[in-house]
Image (cartoon, rainbow, N blue to C red; front, side, top):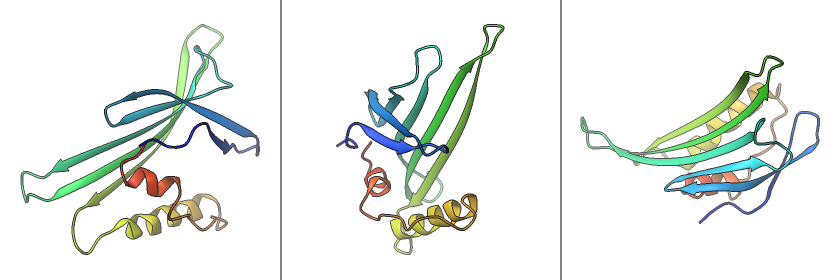
Amino acid sequence: MSLSQPMTWKDNADANTVFNLQSLQGTTSRYIDVASTTTEPRGIRVSHEVVTSKKDGVTTDRHLIGLSDTQLETDGSSGTCQVNLTMVLPRKPSLSTTNLFHLVHILLDMITTGTAPTLDTTGVLAQILRGES
């Protein structure tokens, strides 16, 4: 199952940024900002991985949300800035997605100077934690 299309998110200038699915390979989805270009793409990557530790046999779910913005320089070279959020949830009885929601909210509260909204525990983050992308 994938996230609803298109996805519209606000940027720091409060302008809508619309992302469409560009590719889906295995458990990785890539979305492209419809206003960006092939030479200066802005994108979102959502990926999932399930790993089992050889040391203790614990299965762990890993989820990555990555955003990138590539810009061309006047000399023809390009530069890319990135923001990544990796969420790791061992399949242990004492841990659940609630723990991740709390941590993500603390992170958002920290970077928004105490103005983070309440997280929708049934929205996009919940979909990503279920392995949807």
